[in-house]
Image (cartoon, rainbow, N blue to C red):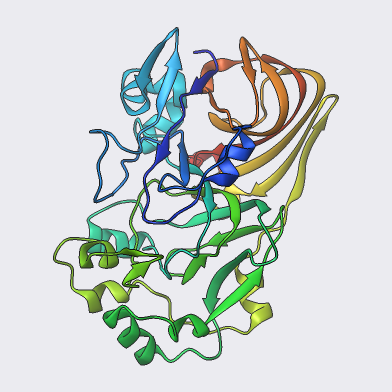
Length: 355
């Protein structure tokens, strides 16, 4: 199958944001709203109290002049899109979810389940370990909250989480000023929150599970179902998802931060690893810099989904500009790439026999 684009796929969330995505796409009047995320290569439904379609979160592929839901396209052409080894091990699912995310406010303190807790609490084979690739910030107040610090008092944190007032609990979490190019891995169980004014790419396990016990996200009041992840959930049991391990500031950053490293260099193309899927064993991410012309097969050994960060790129029959999202099927073979652009490729997990 040939390379194809995804239609825009903004997803409703409980927090305000989106200006960073609009700016990336050259929107003349960028605005914040309740659609602060663009979901890419998604066969994962969004869990929202507000529904706009019967398939919120699912990407739409633009193939052969028509629009097709990505989950249905995967079901109809799994081997062509994903490769036989991927399908044999993972089935006809992409195995990751990618997003462009832009925050105008701080998101609630939260944690996502690891795979063990996902099976136990959500009857799911996918947890929600995620990676963040910071693209930019709005001002000096932009920050990320990651990991418990030495002020952690587990009982006080849990009591605050049960009440929903977590103003004091926020002091138990490290706050980091960040910049474009920072890459972090937020493992299942790690307390975190994206602060105000950050634009980033998230790549994660394909789920929308979240324990976010704060009562309010900005002015939006969260229901108990939204706070604790499921209707009728036991709040204390859901709070067990958090990994209550305090670390000093340097250790917490080292625990989460990933180093970008060279992967391959060709005339007209440089590749750098942002998230090494041979180490993470869940998903991967590669930054590609295209300059001039390059023809070949991307050296990933798998399908890949791309997000254009800057520049302009002709890829096969497609013309790609900032904010465009596209998919390179496993069976695409050699492609001609012309132009100059920065692209982040999200990669599915590798089958065990290829690790």
